[in-house]
Length: 104
Image (cartoon, rainbow, N blue to C red; front, side, top):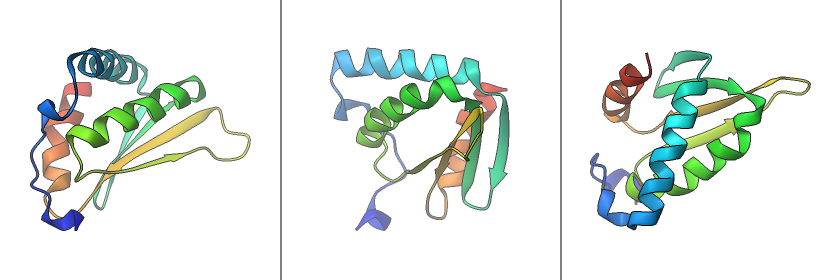
């Protein structure tokens, strides 16, 4: 059950090549964030629509080392942005706060 997952990032869950790609994607996404919205259980990052594929690839890697996170990618009809929401159970928002502060 996902609620049993500790709120700890497990970097050893991905190999060195994946870690390099993860870091590059994180830097790309961080540099592209237009707006950050706080949600009840996490944060929503608003990104340019061109970040859809990098965000999806980031999710693929991030979920390996942080299996307690929930991810949502949303594109509204006719929108020129994509929303990446990171959320989860109690405690996840606090865990994410440090990450979000790095983006400011």
